[in-house]
Image (cartoon, rainbow, N blue to C red; front, side, top):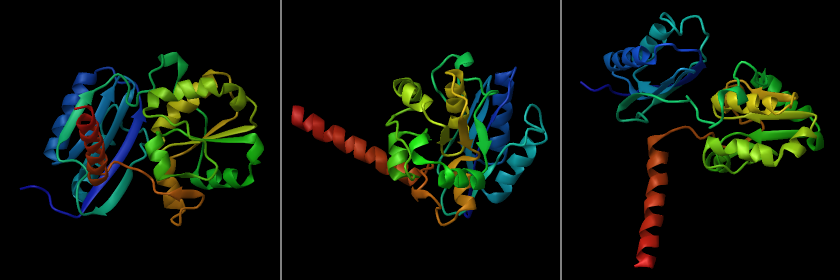
Length: 260
């Protein structure tokens, strides 16, 4: 019998060296199927990144299992849970091997996640936004252009990327300006992209780099009224995703009609 609402969705990631990726994939597949979870789990030698949906009991069962088994036990994974949903964001389950759990398309030594920017709690990040002089501070939205246009922090820079792998190009094009700032504040949805993005800035010689711990997700928990964030935080939702692709398909249809 398929699970019924209300549902929960959990987003998480953890950078940790995984020596036997295939074994972890098989274990994750079995665990998720046993708990009737749907979603996506990406696994590589550098760690794991997942978005899963199911009943509250199934999500809790997954969290408990992860926190009690190697190589993830004792790592204090930040489980970002959204409750009381009427529908699941996925209709199926994919557990797969990837080169990077989030792809920045750089050599490993150019974005060492052991050397990231300083993590600021939502409260400290909010204070930094208030107290930092605008002329000497760069606030960088590490997400893509679509996410930025849905919602972003006041005065945040938009690198206008379509995918994360384009972010390093924007950084190199703006490196002189970034180097002139006294402070660089970075943020993304949940923190995973900032880990690599801030590490890359430090690799290029910038030392005044800070990132929002837990991303926009945790910030909006701390500031339910939105705080300094304007708009909405884009997270994967099946309805939004379908509408987006309907728009793309419609554009392709118009283009083909025009050509023919």
